[in-house]
Structures are given as structure tokens and as C-alpha cells.
Length: 322
Image (cartoon, rainbow, N blue to C red; front, side):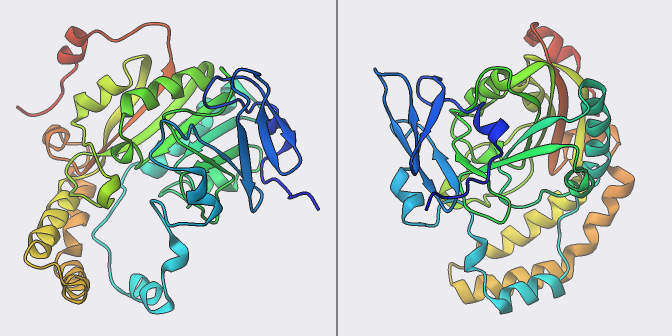
């Protein structure tokens, strides 16, 4: 019996080979590249197509066929951990995410009555996305390099397996720091967006390593803007403030004293209980000029453009306090 693929038929028709960008066809229990020089087959696991450029990706087909833990694995979290996570206050606070997603929704509906949006790193629901996901007229294609409750497609953002101009919008929240080459990823986002398509990104600046071996890069506000230099800016700024950044630094300062798993778990609890209040300062600080130099993370929202922001214009756009 053939697997029920989680992607709709209309989205399947937009798929292309992540190696050569040739249209894919469904053959039995796998997708096949229709280019005779490429002729690559892509497996389908539990209804989820595995569309990665295996020669260039840090992941392999077998990682997903064997259900090996890749970057994220919420299935490994036991009941005690889940209970503690709900009982212990967090040190994280996304201040502007919900407002930004509301703004993005309005822009999307100005372009289409039924926008198609690619979510990169969407195996779980991103902070602030609740209203976006509850709107059934927005078709979200949730992709990731991990299986999760929302994953519809496994793909590596360095080689997005969709045809040029496929999407009205792309969301990439808390992902670019985990990508080996974020500039290549942004080129791919630009490629798969329609003309006047909108991108929304959130990326950390003042955060310690939180992805283990899959954690590579941080961006200042201007560094983040340059990453999206092929987009016309709609809005940008801090999404998580300096209070959250301070709490993260405090926690990781304490964690640096030990490698014991038990002690580190206890330290995380202690650090959260003694510093969670710092994030509430960010409600006051989030739009201050100094926060652009000290935020935990930044956001960028922009429209696909044919123009490229020059480095001189980039420098002149600085709005920090220095």
C-alpha cells in the first residue's frame, strides 16, 4: 500500500531535484529526478519525502531512514523532562515575534487570497506563529532536517527542493545559526520566492551555543541585514532583548564549571529560577537604540528585490547607540 504523503498534490507539483532542479516524479515509494544525467531517487519515510543533496549535505538518506537523531528530537524527551519544562520558568522571551507575524500575514494577503509559505526549520511551532498557523487560508509547508509533529518535508536549506518562484513567503526562525553556509541558504530563499515574495527571519546574536555540533554563526543587526541584501527591507530590529541575553550569559557562565549531565541539569533549573525575571526588562528595552547593539536576537522582514543593498548603504543604515 502506497504511503500517504503529507504534502498536498499542488505542493508536490512544485518539487524539484535538490541537485539539478529538474522536476521530480513519484515512482512507487520514492521520488525520482527526471533528468537522465542525474537520475537520483529520494526515499519517503512515514509519508515525509527526504529531499536532500546527499553529496553536499551533512546529513544522509540513512539518517532519516533509520530515524537517527539529527538536530532535534522531541520524542526523546521523557515525561519528567516535559513536566519540569512546564513548571520551571524560562529565561526566553520573544517580544516582537507575534506582531511581526501579524504584519507578514497582512502583506501575504495583499499578494494572494491563499498564500503558500515555506517554513524552514518547522518541525515544531515557532514562537509567535499561532495566529498564522490557525489561519487555514495560509498553506504552510513545514520543512526541517528533523522529524517532528509538523514536519511535512525533510530538506537541507542549502539546496531547497522547489522550483524557482514557488512561494509567496518564506519563514526561517531560529535556524540560520545552525546552517553551515547561511549566505547560500538566503540565495535559495530568494530563488524559491515569487516576485514580491516576503521573507521573515529571526536569528540570534547574543546567545551561547545551543545546537551542539550544529551551531555555527551569530549576526549583529547590520550583519543580519547584509545576509538579506537582495531583499528590500520592510522592517528589522530586535526580537529578543538584552535582558534575555544577560540571562543566557549567566546560565552558561554557571554551566561552564562542569560537564556532568546531572549537575548541568540542576544548574539549568537554578539559573532559570534566579534569572527568569531579566527577560521582562525587554518589554521596556526592546525598541531602544542601545538594544540594537545588545539584543539576544534580531528579525528581518523583506520583499524579494532585483537590487542588491551596497555595503556603503548598509553602513549608513546603522541605528545603534554607539
